Image (spheres, rainbow, N blue to C red):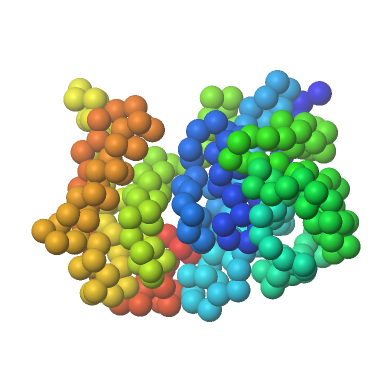
Length: 299
C-alpha cells in the first residue's frame, strides 16, 4: 500500500518549522536563523520512504503584522490549510505561557473549518524539563481536538521518527507526486536567492533583514568550467540600509557574498561566481506592485 500526501507545517514565527523540514529531508532546503519571520514563501520538501512519499510544505510564521509584506506572508501560510492532507501545528515548548498567545489563537481560529487531521507538534523539548510537558499538552487539548500530540526536538531529531510513523498511518493511499530522486520542487534560482537572504539576515541587524529582498538576475551554468555564474540584486527600502549592507569599502557586501558563495558551492556541488548589487526601492514592503515584482505575489 503506497501512501502519499501534502503536509502543511504551520505555526508562529521562530518555532522551528524550517529546522524540522531540513532534518526530515536530510538537506538544508529552507533557510534558518534565530530571527523571526525568516521564511517568506512556501518551501516544499519531499521525503521518500518505502511505499510512501511525504510532501512537506514549510510556511511563513503566522503573526499579526501591519505591513503589506507581513500580510503576504500570513496569507501564504493560511492558504496552505486548504491544500494539505495533514497539518502540523508547531509550538515552542520552551516558550513561557499559560495560554496560547494572540498568534496561536489566530492560528487555532483558522483551523476551525479545516477538514483534515491536525497534529500538535511540541518542538524544542530538549530545552525544557519533562514535567513541564504534561501541563502544556493538557492546556492545548482544551483549545482544539488534535489527531495526535507529539513532543520532539527538530534540532536533535528526538522523536522525529515517531512523527513520521504517525504521518504514514494518517495519510491516504495515493501515487508518488514527484520523482524519487527529488527532494524539493524549488528552482535553483530560488534556492540561491534564499541562501543570499539568509546570510544577510545573519550578518545584519535591526530592521534590515525585514526590509531586504533578493532577486537572482542571471543563473548561468558553464559546464566546461564546472562553474555557475550568478548575478543577484539585493533590494532595500532606504538609502541608509544600502550603505549599511555595502559597508565601509564594501566589506559587508563582500562578507555576505563570500558566505553565500561557499554555501552554494557545497549545495550545488560546483564552483560559483557570485556578483551582488544593492538597490533602493523606497518602502517596497508597503508597495504591492513592487512586492509582486520581487516575487511576493499572493496567488
